Length: 369
Image (cartoon, rainbow, N blue to C red):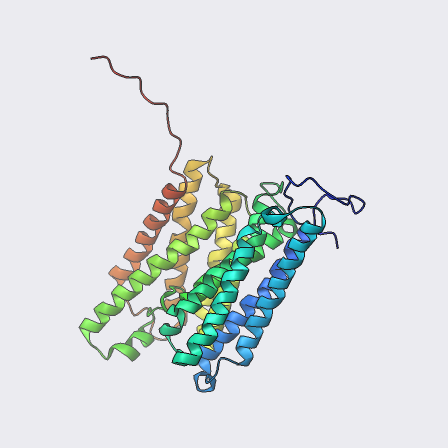
């Protein structure tokens, strides 16, 4: 397969000063292999959350899925770089456009994997939140995100239309989904849609009627929801700086991610139906808002409105599904859950201002004394 876009097979060399980007198919292969990697991440997370008694060694079936996925992805990126070298590019110029950080990510992830083996050999297998904050696991996160977003950067720097069709956008979409999922995975202990105490049954089970502890749970929920909101809205604003994303983009990113997070944490989606419905509902409505408002950095009012409405819808749906589908309804008091929905909208608005501060007008003329 000729991995260099627009380069005829008969052309044996290209100018050393010209860097090229790989084809749509090559980007798609990258992220398909990347999904193998992220699948291994969630398989390992499932084992940590549901099969803790089996975690007695670094050499587990879950790690085998993870590291075989990484190896396949790393070899593919190396093959792409070798293809550029065969076409006449040398040094850093042999890195395809968009794959610079991906190549570095291969190194970081590889070092993190070796470090993880050493860490587990010395200190054993971590469980709970400690596993997510292990330095070697954070190296895997950093390297993984750099690898998985390679197709996103490749598409970003391509001649792709600002309003792409879903198939054309697919490698970038899947790359965003995979990287987003890796980030949510590493913050599962504080992820607002799936992990926080919001139902009455859950709060009653862990609070034992202590008013002090219930207040602590309210604070934990507030921090987790606002933290999660930054990532949920942030990924949308990032994509919309470059594209009017095709319908289905956020249904996949929000909905499918919430489903696999719920299954990983609970062992089944049947007992975690509320977050799954909220995730898919939020994704569908976000796709509708993209289509109706067409937010982009040149349409500042629509940009601000979109960033405010997405969290308003997401967290409203979250608490609605908890109220109707969880035993006992919402465990947090009404002032909290209504207020946090409004605060999340303010948070989205602030993010939109940080991402696009607005047009800077002309400097005023200097006043004469």
